[in-house]
Length: 130
Image (cartoon, rainbow, N blue to C red; front, side, top):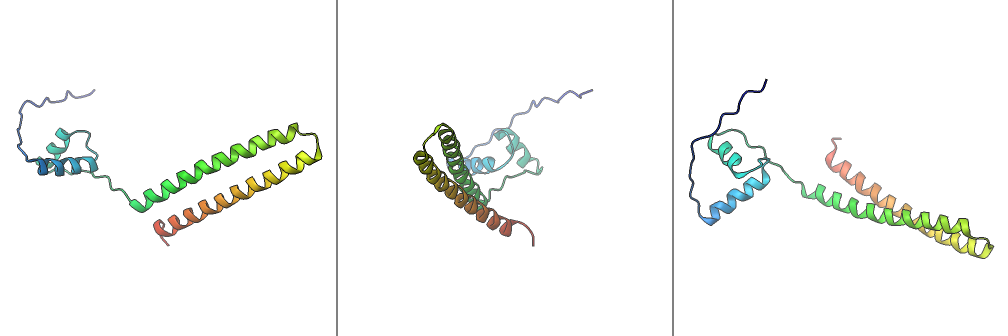
């Protein structure tokens, strides 16, 4: 059975200037604490505070992969639409135009896949042990 949580009945007032308060907010934002009270309590009682550490190069890689993913989705939609158009065509001339467009879309998709492959390879070389 769960033990009852002990209520905190003592209050502590802390006065800070704006610069100190801003530093505290910045550190709170990097921590995993949910609120200022929890953060201050951990600092005051010398319990460990867990901080999130962001990796800028990994963030840049993720942003680039997201952008490439969106481009691939658009190309996929174009290919699906062109396949629907092809199934409705009857004349050879229209089919040859469709085939040219399909080849262009396929080449674009393959080039984007190659770019994604190179980004993933760069990330693997940087972050995975040899």
